Each structure stands twice: as C-alpha cells, then as structure tokens.
Length: 277
Length: 277
DNA sequence: TTGACAATTGACTCGTTGGTCATTATTATA
DNA sequence: TATAATAATGACCAACGAGTCAATTGTCAA
Image (cartoon, rainbow over all chains, first blue to last red; front, side, top):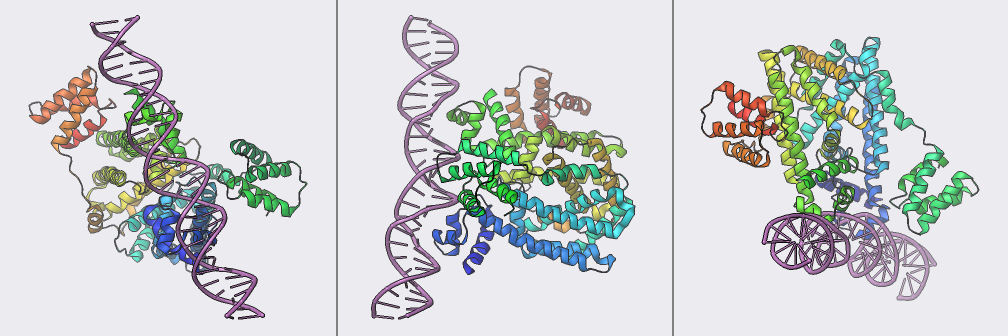
C-alpha cells in the first residue's frame, strides 16, 4: 500500500531528527499530509511502525551485507567489500542508521530490543564467518576479540560520518579499516573474549522461555490490569497454557485481543512463540 | 543537601533501568519516599536533574582518568592504567555508565548534548596526549585514527560488560587492549582521519575555561566544605590563582591534598590544566 | 506553651499523547 | 443516476506527564 510506504518514509525522517519517543503520531500525520485516523489504517500502533521500519531496513541490510560477503571470491577483497558495503548502506539509509544509533538500547519495548539483538547476532555471525574464512586456524584464540574490534570500528567511524555532515571517502575509510583489521589479526596474542564468555553472553537469548516464566508474567499482568476484555483474555490464555482445551482459532482470537494492550504485548509475543503461531 | 543526594542516587537507578524519558518525576519521588513537591525544592526541573547527574559523574570520571594519565611515569604502564581506570570507573558507577550509553545521542535537550560533547572532547584530548607521548613523531599521520580506535575499543567492550551481568577480569581486558593499541600504533600506515577532518569536527565552540570560571567554582566549593586541610588548600590555591606567590612544589602539594576530595576533583583537574602541570 | 517561620505535601492545572469511532467523502458497480 | 462499499477524517477520550501552590506539618526561639 502506498500510504504505508509514505508513512514509513516520512516518519523515518522525523525519527532521525527527534527520536522515536519524541515524535508524536500527530506530527507524523501532519508531515505526511494525512489524518490521524489514516495512520491507524496502515499501522495498528506507533510501535508497530518502528518495528516495521526496523524489519524493512535490517532485512535489507543483513541481506545486502551477507550477499557481498558470500559472493566475494577474492579473499584479498573480502573485508574491503564488507566495510564498503556496510558504510555504503549506512550512507544510503542514513536516516535509518541515525535512528538505529539513537534508539540502540533506549527503547523499553521488549519486542524492539529482541529484534535488534537478533539482527545484531546475525551481523556478528557474518563477521565471524569472514574472520574464520580469512585467517583460519591461526586466530582461533582471538577470533571473538577480532569480531568485537571490527564492530567497534564500525560503530565509532559510523558515528563520525553520520552525525557530522562531512562528505566521507568511503573507499579510503574501508581501506584504512581493512589494514587495521589485518594488523590486529596478524599481531594480536592476548585474547579477552573466550569461547565460554561468548556462550555466557549468548545464553540469555537462547534461553528457552519456559511455560512457568510465561505463567508468572501473566499472573503479574492480571494483577495489574483492570477488568476488561484484555484481562479476561489473559486469564483464559493462562488457563489454556496450563491445560489446553480451546481451539486454535479461539486462542488466536484471544491473542489478538491483547496484542495491543501495553502490558500484554510481551506476553502475546511469548505466547505466539510458545504456541507456534 | 541530603535530599539532593538521595534524589540523584535513586533516580540514577531508575534511569539506568528504564531510561530518562520513560521515568516520571512521580516514580522518582515514590522511589525516594518523598513528595512530588519536595523534588522541585531540590531541582528546578527534571532536566536540571539529568544535567546535575552528568556533571557530578563526568567531572569525577574526567578528573580521575586525567590524574592517572598524568601521573603514570612508566610509559610501559600508561595505557594499561588508562584502560583499567576507565573500565573501573564504569564498573564502579555502572548505573551512570548505563545511562550514558542509553542516552548517548538522544536529542531531547540541547544543553545535554553540548555538555556531553564537551566531556567527550576532553576525553579525546586525554587519549591524544597519551598517544603523542607514547608513540611520538612516528605516528603523527595516524594519531587521530588511533584515538578513534581506542574510543571504539572502549565503547564496544563497555557495552559487553555493562549489559551482561558477567564478572569481568578488568586486568586481562586492559592488557588485551593495550596490546591491540600497540599493535595498531606500530603497524598502521593508512590514515583516514586527517588533521583537517578533525578540525571540521571540532569546529563547534570549544569554550575556554577561564580563570574567572575556576575562581567561581572554588568559591562555591569553599562555602560547601567543612573546615579541613582540603578546605585550607583550596583557599590557598585560590589566592595563588589570583596572585601567584607560591612555588611550584607547594602548589603541586596543595593539589595532591585535594585530589581525592569528591568536591575538589574537578577543581584539581582544572587547576592542573591551568597551571600546565 | 506559643507563634513565627521554614519545610513538606499532594491535589490540582494544563498540555500532550496514543488511540478510537461516528461521520463524511470518494470510488466502484449496477 | 442510484446504491453499496471503501477510504479518510478529525473531534473526541482516557491516561499520563511536568510543574504549581494553598494548605498542612514540623521546628525552635522566646
């Protein structure tokens, strides 16, 4: 739908300048030249918009970088193409990149954070695969440090060119970082990030969300909520979780009931995952 | 005033968990066990609170790091002490460090941004001075890149240990980064950040710290302090600033007297800079 | 014990927000 | 042209935010 496109483009501009929280739906619709109601025809909520933006751009970015990395045959050029493609994406979608930087760890919307973390993990995986391909066994000990340093380079140099309106020579920047990466790979001997540490870091996200945890969260929510359709839905879903009796259609309906209630979004998310919808 | 202290401590906790915008004054006062009105007796606004927090911690941090850097005599240990002290501060005041990371480039308050930028510039200056001292002329071409890489290391590794509740071996981390720094300094040949680029970035006002401003700060401190060696030292230093009569040795001694008093760290830092020690 | 003064409270104002929905405008179909 | 279906509107709502201030409570010298 064209409206959706318009809203995404215009809102991105505003988010990049003022931040997500600080931009109201009213401002977005004014800027688009549409009514407030029209916004809610395209997006169920403001949160859904930012989530859509994240997905739209991160899928593109992830796919782009991955394509480059898997299709460069000359090892010599691998990191150059990686850096260049990364920074080039940032430059092309600088508004989105700015939003990303600004909102990095700020949002209290759990779905947002999880999404970002999962994309970040994909990015790390891509970098790791490059490091392993290029430097092989020799850097086994320091490969995770290398990945982090590369992320550090990208992060700090991105800030430089995103928030200063200075034209940058991406070719030179990429060459410069390729050299730094090679230098580190060749001469580093003291690792800090061990296999175990990585596992500890990654563990949380892989941590299976248990039925008990969801139940606990639901009880907490039920106490906090006032009498409403949403509350009743949560109670029913809780029973369903403890002892499945309802049909899939009903469960899906109940989930729909609560998915826009601020206290229930996360629960709804977990339940959808749990039920496998 | 004790209330101010209380509010700053408690609010920092909340900010670290939920972010500044997402924490209401009501929540802060509830958490402190005081009334909403009482909050506005200590702070003119919510913004003034975050500004006060920034100043309180950044002054301490900047002074601490600078002291370490200017007082390490053994070049071999310079970067180690720098990294260690930096990460140690982050660990000690991890709530504040988290707020910093979260609120980094949020643009809700101009004064906030300007303040952060000016502290960031001081930090960069400190790093640059170390790089110049340690590696001398040879790295003239790549020194700004080195500074940025060091900032990148700190940023990315800080994220790792701030947002994972994993106990970290700061000694190992520091050693690991020292090696990386040395490796880069020794082998990097392709600069990206030129003198001109730095000047373009720094172009925004680099407000000079005037004698008058230091005097003002000192008077303020003198009023707040109880009778003590530290207070006496500050008074003497103030006279010295107005009319130099004491020998360098005495001045240095006086500075040593006050450098660990929480209210004086900043003054001590400014004076060392001013006197050129 | 009194009363003047300061500290503290929390109900209140006023503005803004995300989100809704009865109403209106537009388009497609017959 | 008449009618049904769809798109779009914006006044409206409840909730919540920062900040205020008249009223209350606490303090302490006389």
